[in-house]
Length: 237
Image (cartoon, rainbow, N blue to C red; front, side, top):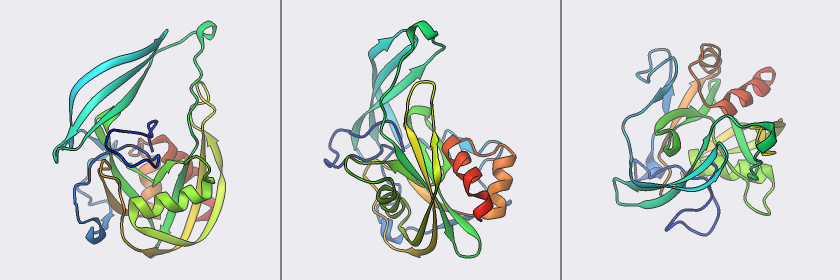
């Protein structure tokens, strides 16, 4: 999930912006399980490399006091290009208070077999790095949050769920936006084909429930909607 819906050369349906796929044969992509012996960086689980995107130029397109909107021109290793907005927030006074109108998004806590949760290892261009996140995405116009959750889970991970339960919703950045994150618990998963967008750079990760909450409490997870969703789901797992 990101603030941006559209990019150059992207199909008309509005979707989240991330990066180009590392493995072009997504239907055959393998899940990876994270345990304590994982080679991924810890405390926090965030890394800068490898970089699937190169920034060719950047331009400030809007400014309101200490709030700035920049437009980065990016090119992937496979030649795919897109324009990606980047929001820069500094301290702002109550006398000059911005309000951003952002679409809601859905975030899913998918429970796979053997007491594991389905995560994605996702590259985010604005922070120029990788995060471990739960599947999530923006709600399209005319779409319900639950339909969004079903679509994003399938697109990002290839999984579908037989049972769904809404755990609640959260304000993500109430200081500047009324955007909501709708949190869903998905069970009885079935693996299918992955249908990621050409600019999405992510890999599926399977994490045991115990390990996921260990990482959350140890400060290893840095994606705030993921931490909030895990908090809502804890008593249901």
